[in-house]
Image (cartoon, rainbow, N blue to C red; front, side, top):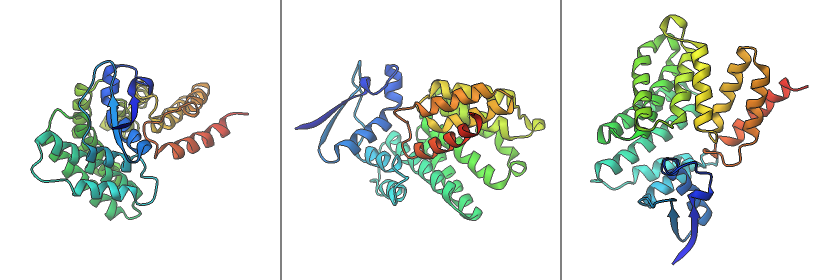
Length: 273
């Protein structure tokens, strides 16, 4: 009764830990490839428990949010989740709702609407952490929700959020030391906040470099790194970074990839003769 088998070992995994960390994304990709039918998702060298079909469908919609209606579909699927789920599964739904609300907020034209989505996202991720404090994703997206809310309010009105965001990124990295996204968030904070509040562009550059090294398929991380190199007069490194972006074959986030690639090529065109 199996229509398709997908081997994570052949999909670019660097280790068993990496396979397990990226399982939700690959499950979503496999689901979109198979469309209808039963899937066997195998993690090498040892098997892991299969992701709930509903979560795979949510992730499939989220990772195709560049298509009309898919982001709202992800939210609708989350809101249709049954009641009385085990805490860890309820947490998985909650942080996914947080994640989708953050993305919706990023696309809002109105500051009021942005703040409303970010506030709702924060509440969802706080609940996700309360349900399962061992979820790196719950801590990560809670930190992102706090950061986006702060950006919408304005840096000087949100300086009180610096410590909470750092705390969530520290919790993320304690649970998943290979989480490149947490290093990117730390880099964004160090780059954007003023020096008197702890901002430090040199340390930000180091965080951006770590983010790309740990998550080379996360294409959103390349542009900030290239721009940081340019800030420090390292044009050759900026060009190398943007060419590495062009070389990515299996982006972690297919929805953001086209825009990331277009932005990278636009910047690269201004740097090369």
